[in-house]
Image (cartoon, rainbow, N blue to C red):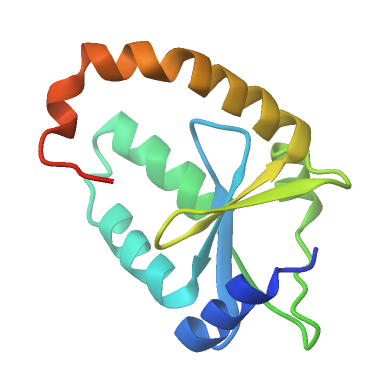
Length: 137
């Protein structure tokens, strides 16, 4: 897959085009981290107790699926089949910037989730408005 120029430039600056791709445990999408950002995430994951079953599952899934990749000279990534299958990636993809990472979604799944979130979002925000205190967008 080709990385759009604006993301490619950021990845080149932050990590010389070296990235880590892993799964998202809550959604059928992939998470793309510049190498330096992933190293911080991995250190936090490794700092969790191996005795706690939930922490161990988180480590197993996120670290276990983490795949080191490099952008080629044309700014493309070759995603392993295991990761493509997890996120049901086909021809049309959506990339969503999330601060320290990029999410990769199958376009049809993204659209379904977006419609769901928009339909549910307004009522959920009204119910939990205190979490947004002090937020101005």
